[in-house]
Image (cartoon, rainbow, N blue to C red):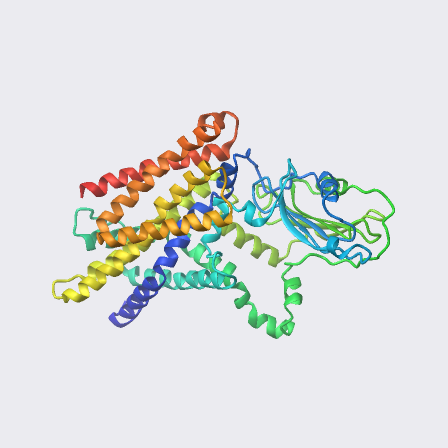
Length: 512
């Protein structure tokens, strides 16, 4: 590559990387833990393992239970299973029956335990797994600003990836095999940045593209909405199949008993390997009552297999909206592929563990890029004032980023000791704790100290996770394995292995 294009790409790569570095580190760090969101949730609640996102809730029993707490007549009721946990989401639409008292017609949203039928609001059900998952796209920042911030960070990361490959293209093979751990720091960090960046490039490229798609898709389709849908958002959502079917309210009693479970069983018998993830009961107990069943085929049998069917309860007739074997469109394929590529949920633990490792490699690449920037500017002829400024910037950056490890490990301990979390507690504890740790390391003004003792603190807290879990619940990881409670076993062993590895890293930093 000629000097001028090289210099342009080099500076674009540096500027785009520095601008998004802290945000990108947070996304990669919390995103890596988010691969195990469901395991973290069930570990925190001490719930038995759930093997899939299929609905295990008995809808008939759930409706009977809800009928003792709410007036259900004329409502649209939706049960949705998002994750591998025991609390599907329940949405009660406002009743359409005008004869019911207004106070009894109000809608509601909550989570319903699939065995105990206990209700929890979203803040009450909030947990550490959900917190880390949502932090990786800045959902704690009011919507839509957090979403857009994470989306544009992913977009600029894509820019940094492409320019990074371009500037290393001529020597990408030879430099990949060069690693000089005993050389001076600038060479060491450059070698690590190049080698690990090349290894993680395919992974990072996928996550940059899919992350940007998820978070700024509304902006991406905005011109399409203006041209083809005349700014009609509802029509656009229908075209993208993000909405449920709508059925008019007849205002007459159904006049017959019904069973929603019967329709679920009928659907599963019609479509082999079909996992039901969403149930809609529209116009409850009305003459125009419909039961809507949605789900998808097991990924082992078909990568893209979305199915939707609607039953009219009055006469039992069925309308197949989408056959999972023959009715999936290009749009279905794109949405499913993007989702599964981003979440890595189609090949079990091996893929998710690899994805976690690649995410942490991404964190190392980001850190090494900043350290390369620092060492490149601390030359002998650099004015002392400028050196101090550069060191302060790097110190602040490293303090913020590296403090995430110990505060995350400590959060696992605290939620287990406390016996749960909740939204307000997690917000207060995690963000205040993260801030305090960051400030303490900033005041030390020593990057080596920060690196060493964030590893040491994180390792210590992490090693305590399986111990505290065993003491508080009696569910030691070997007992969890014997009882086939893989989620609890995995989190304990995950922290055990991760803590030992980072403690080894602490010892290596100490010796250099």
